[in-house]
Length: 577
Image 1 (cartoon, rainbow, N blue to C red):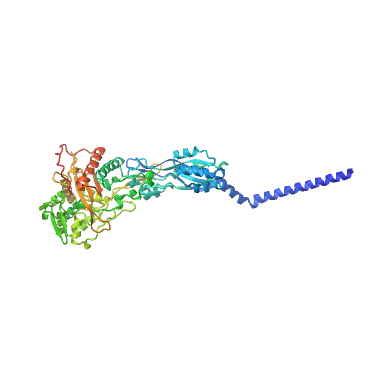
Image 2: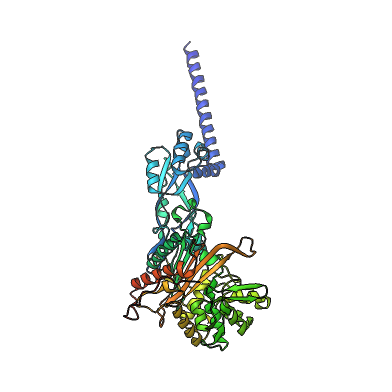
């Protein structure tokens, strides 16, 4: 009996030993399989669950005015990420977060319903939005510090600066044109998360050397603001469709202001019509009307005609072929000076007849009309100046007083500035320099003379004529500023009808262009008002805005008056053409 019992015990021990050895061998085999044959596969799976290779981008560089005021900058924001495997109710989380972020809950639910350890939810979230989402206390939702584009001055110079999209890349304006300079540099990194799905080393990776470079503009924030205010008042007072105002330093070509109305807020650009985004001062061409007469006069002087040359102005009506042109008053004999001062269309047409089409065309192209200025803005228009050999008789007459030719606002103020500075056509400047994120100078742009448009003597005579425009007998009386000798020219152009055939009835563009002081012009200003109602002469509509911009800019820049005497108040009649 005892022997049988011991035998059974021994058999059981053997069986247990066999089972234990088999189990150990099985575990060893499995361990070997995992560590040797499946090691790479499982390692990659773990890496995917807790680590992710991504490309990060540094903070975007700044856009600054010439006094280093911020026009476009990056501010603190939040990036929201998720660990979907830890979200208990994907549908509820998607509904609540989607409502706060404006994201489709269905797409969020698909993300949250996965069993991944990492997923992006939204970049560039405002701290206020992030705070509201944090208050939901949803397990598996995480918040990391980030930055987003912000425009501290809201609509100021918005059409010039432009804006960025959701990925912080430039979509319009300078943000788009200089995107390669402004955007932060990129780097591939591996994000590591802990067991709760939180990023362990993301902040350390966003190093300062990835920050983009900054651009410093020639714009002056204060003058830009003054210009926008005056322009808005002109457009609203005259119930106009839109308007533009530009301020330039004649001696250097630096643009101190490029104002547009209507305006838009680039911080919320999606709430505005796309047409509002466009920098129309550079991209759009218009017929400038009588403002072109100063260039016609310049062409005559370059051909040897004197300012005192007398031209018969046909008592206000002049027939060219089957067309008839008119003046606002019945003039007989006028000198070249008086033709500019009183803005005679007939006088301008007869000047072209006397000097020939080629002379006028060469002068206009010398001032830059018909070609781009190469300011470096995407979409710049060359305007339209057809070759003189294709001009008909009415073409040459119409072009002499600013119809049948189109130009951008930039071309027009650049041409006016050439007269102001003594005859040099300057290349317009908008970007002054590029600096690194540490403030070190990378590139600086200098004023550049494109060519000599007219002789100093011609420029001097045209300045004197433009000074007569802003006088008791001239068309620009509403541009007079006490204490300063102002040079200017009014312009009123009937707009081309839709389809390009003929001119639209009761639709005008009102223009005033000029500069001051007479002897040493500091600023050139151009104001354009599109489709004003009731009043439409440039001297009535655009000249007052010109006066406001120039006077307030002079006050801001501490440019003293040229004289002490106060000009006699003028009758309110003036301001034709």
